[in-house]
Length: 174
Image 1 (cartoon, rainbow, N blue to C red):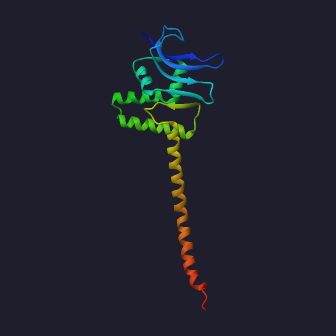
Image 2 (image 1 turned 90 degrees about the horizontal axis):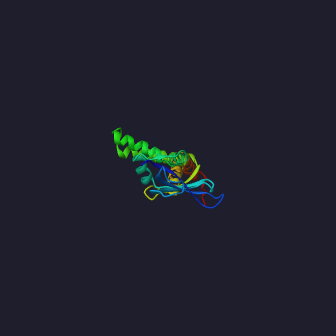
Image 3 (image 1 turned 180 degrees about the vertical axis):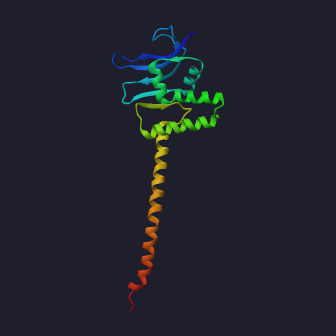
């Protein structure tokens, strides 16, 4: 059986909404499917995507062929990159921890760059985009604060020393 990962259209006329499904390639576009992998809503701006990484990786690992559109969606949300990293783990090129670190680094870079072709809703097994966005922002703020404090600390110390030196001179006696 040739399994395909493809879009299954739902929604009304001129308001498409798609399910990303694993299906036998001989089935109709909106016919029966084996498993639902996620959703894709192109109407929202930016488009909304919710993909279950584990299910998508399972089907890609079993040899399911994604259509061009589904391949671009999976690539944008990072499933194809994660599959690439898992292949390196299987070959022994690096460990699973290294693969997880590389994927997290890639995901953080995507968030920092603000590449928002899709509004990505990640499954519960992975971090939510809101928390991913908040964590780098907090780190950046901490870095800026420490940099400013380090730069301004010598000037504050000089001001305190000047105040101590000038304070006895300006005192008046009764």
